[in-house]
Image (cartoon, rainbow, N blue to C red; front, side):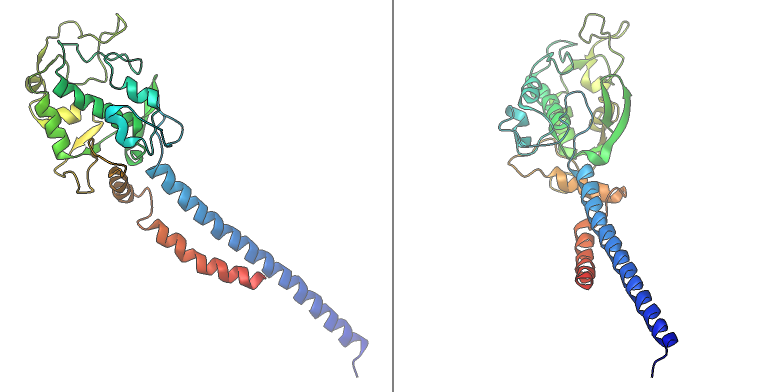
Length: 274
């Protein structure tokens, strides 16, 4: 026969179990919430690195499809950081984009100019430059690219097609005379052949835009260098960006697998709460 004391003890134990059960359920809810947030953060981090636009003068806030992009910029139309208008301006001499004068030492040959246009298309339109984006302390942009591993063939063909052209500077990013509103050769400089200013392809690609590019021994299709030139809707530079993002520790080596691995645990905990 139970006494009043034993009944009180049983009630106390029962209340403790109820409270403890509520506490465990709340802990499980918080754990599931944490796991869910981890999955979201992994996805967002990868997206920011592999599919984003730098904070530049004419870049869109986020990459998106464009109905059409002009001529050499067309390969980026399915997912671009540039607008159609920007892509058209990229093909013009002294366009509103930067007012840059390609013909500062005589008229630049078409075979040479097309590479600079392609370079502009990559810079303005590519959403896969995240691993090489750096802060820039410049009035006209807040971010820039640095040491993008350019494919060997792209660099060498660019240099070869410009060999007979002339320039007065090895760094085209800065040091120009802008007093007239367009860039002109600084005082006390002279126009010289490209091969005198840039003795080799590596010298040219790394110096012309203050180390925006880094010359490599890799070639197109290796998935280890960024291509200026490609055809079709499949942009090969996304895989290149992923490789270097992993190398730099910016994203996990197999982010999809890690997110998937969390799902069974999340489901198990959810079942326990049901």
